[in-house]
Amino acid sequence: MSQKLNSMRLLERHDIPYEVTEFPDTMRDAEEIAEVLGVPPYLVYKTLVVQPAEGGKPLLAMIAAHRKLDLKTLAAISGHKKVVMAAHKDAEQLTGLKVGGISALALTHKNWPVYLDKPATAHQHILVSAGQRGMDLRVPTMTLVRVLNAKIADISTE
Image 1: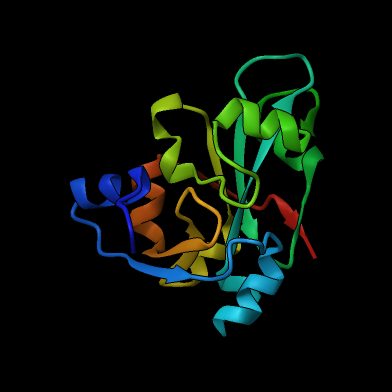
Image 2: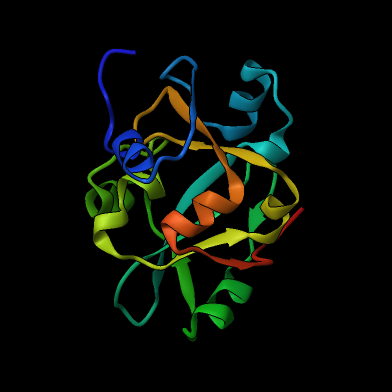
């Protein structure tokens, strides 16, 4: 591992154990990444940038690789009339990170609301982006929730 990422520094500051998993940085599809890493897709979480239709702070939604974000439910839970997925270029502009490497752990300084899909809580550890393409971090789920101040909700569908 060449350099420490902000996501790793954050975990270390909070004494949270993590494991770095690496894969080809050309890969962006979380399901394919799960396959390459040899882990089930329900353990690999992708971070999606979502924008309230009426404007305001973006939200981060973390859902398992094989699931789809339920925008209606997320809007209701987050108190917005409507939310939309940020276009790739907007997501990159807003976060300063590349799509495929967007990490809630690397964005804590922005204080955006983070929503973690409820099924994650059934697992002791999940894999999340380290904030750079080609790298995921395996972290304890409930500790992650605490560090991100994430709200847990059913925000995805099969």
